[in-house]
Length: 178
Image (tube, rainbow, N blue to C red; front, side):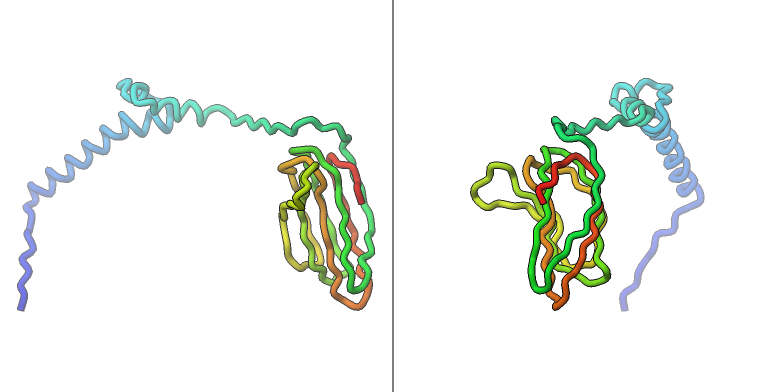
């Protein structure tokens, strides 16, 4: 059989190791943690290493500036009921500037529709479009900040044998294309 010999350390060795660990922890606390977390730098090493800049940055309130681009359209709120005929598809779109914001919510009377929420860049002749969401549902709620200037909206497909009404509510900077 294999025999394993596990070394047994003396109390003196364990005490030395414990004291060394405490000393290392104190040095790291004073030179790294206090300057980086609390902007307290008693030795000056934190500033030399750039650690106090981390604490100073966290003390400032963040400022977020979003470039919405030129918004030539006014903020508007609209609600409309759109009837999707049985077995047919229908698109409803908005013309929007780059970085324009749209908040939306649509729902049906409970019946599900296949839909593609997408955008088409202005002036594109290749047929390119970018889909934001493709699925089957009876409702959707969210917001969109447009990545490019062009038309953005939904294509709904009614696969049932009855017309389905979509109630759409929007708020944002857009022109209704229909």
